[in-house]
Image 1 (cartoon, helix red, strand yellow):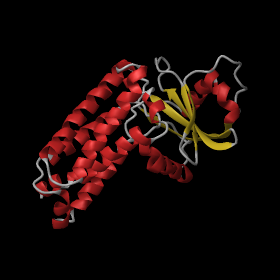
Image 2: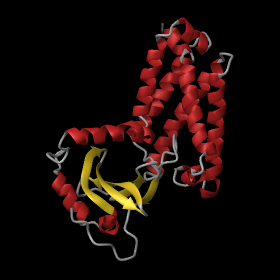
Image 3: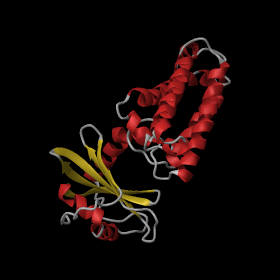
Image 4: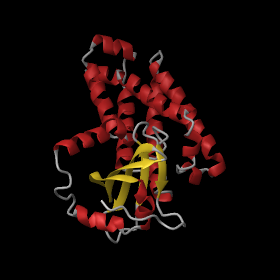
Length: 286
């Protein structure tokens, strides 16, 4: 059974790499997003876009090779090498450009976090397992269709480890939780929500965007060193969601950040980590 699972890794790995390649090669915002990744620090701003596209080309070649016959062991070896490279790149980004975007699976801004490292670990494990394949993947699935359940579980794990896909499942799940629970009735992580909001309302950045807000707090959660606080908002007549990232610790070196996201498309319309120089707007009174 293990050799069948090993042989069936190719289509999942190929699909993942082709998706990543499409983001880098064909999205309109790909060139812009490359400037917010650590590639601009590693290669320089002038060469970051070229490096980003080149990586997409490599991902496309390896992904296509995994999906197409024949079975060839260097394909899995290439995945292992790429996984190690991704992990090294994430480590470099964390140190050299901690505020940079991953730029891995979408054109959205996705900070470097433990999920990215764990995802690289999954890619390494799947590639290593795929190196022990004994037959082409279509034959493996035809012989034992039950292996599709294993691939489905792996795909679910990959999605769970990918912040880029949170809008498709995690955010709707949190909204569903808000409908059936009282998220404001307690606190998380030992820091009361009222304390977070008091700190938030004093920030110039909050006052700058306050007039966009159309609701009180809709939901909140803690992740890494931040508490994320969500409001309904409106920007240029578009229905949006404003997400504030508030450092949990009072003495934290991290700064307050806000992102305003279009609810219908998931596009990030505004992203700030400080208030502009102009006079801030009046504070929102929930």
